Length: 306
Image 1 (cartoon, rainbow, N blue to C red):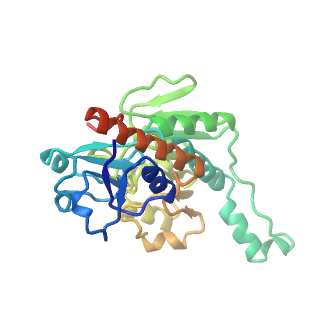
Image 2: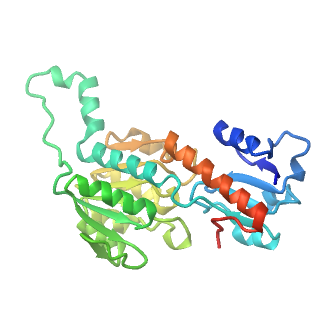
Image 3: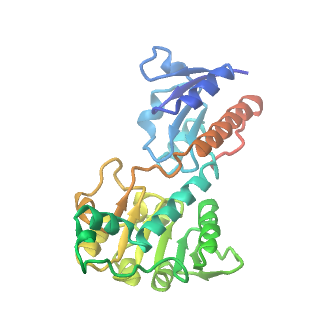
C-alpha cells in the first residue's frame, strides 16, 4: 500500500529515499499536490497546531521524527481525527552518548582547558590549571528515568559514578538512589542531567531554587527540552558564579539562544544534535516506515501518541 506523504520540515535524504523506495509519494511544501497528503512528517519539538493542520484537509496520520511530541497540539489533531505517532527509543542511545560527552566536558573542564591553550597560558611557567573534579566517585543525578535516562545511568556506571534519579515514580533501578523531589536530587548531585519528557508538569522545573541547590560546584546538562529550564534564572546563576557549569543541546526558543550563554567559558552549547548520528537516523527511518506501514494496513501506527 502506498500513500501521499507531506514533509512539514526538511528531513534526512535517507528517509526520503526509503519512503520513495516503499512506493510512497513524498511531497515538499512547494508541490501543488501538497494539500492532498494523507500522511505528514514533522519534528515533534516544532509547533504544529490548528493553523498547520488546516493546510492539510485530508491528513489522517502525523508522524513525529524522534520520540518527542511536545510541539504537537494533540487536541487540535484529535478534533480533526488525525492520529499522531512517534518513535520512542529510536535515538535514545545517541542522545545518551552526547549527554555523557557533556558530563565529561564539564567535570574535566575541557572548554577551559582548550581556552587555556588558545590563550598561551600553558606555555607560561606557573600557569597550570587546577585539578578538575573528574567523574570517578562523582554523583550524577538524572531527572527522568525513561529510555534516555536509563542509558545515561548505564554509561555513568561504567565511569564509577554514584547514581541517582528523580522520576514520576520510583523505577526501582539497582544501584540507583531514588529522589521524589527534583530539588533534593539537585542538592545531592555533582552533575544534574535532564532527560525528562517535556510537558506542562516539567515547564521550568529547573528554576532558581533548583540551581541554588546544585550550587557553585554543581553542573547542569540538558538533553531533554529547553522548556525544562528557566533560562533567565540559569543566566543569572552563571553570571553570579552560582553554578559550576552548564551544557545543553536544547533551548527554549530554538534556534534562538539567550545571548548571555554565549559568553560563559563554562558553558558547552550544541545545536540540538543529540539524535543526529548515522545509527540513530537509520533507527528512526525504520521506525517511521513501520508506523506508516502499520497505519495503512490496520488503521493504527505501531507507536501511537495517546
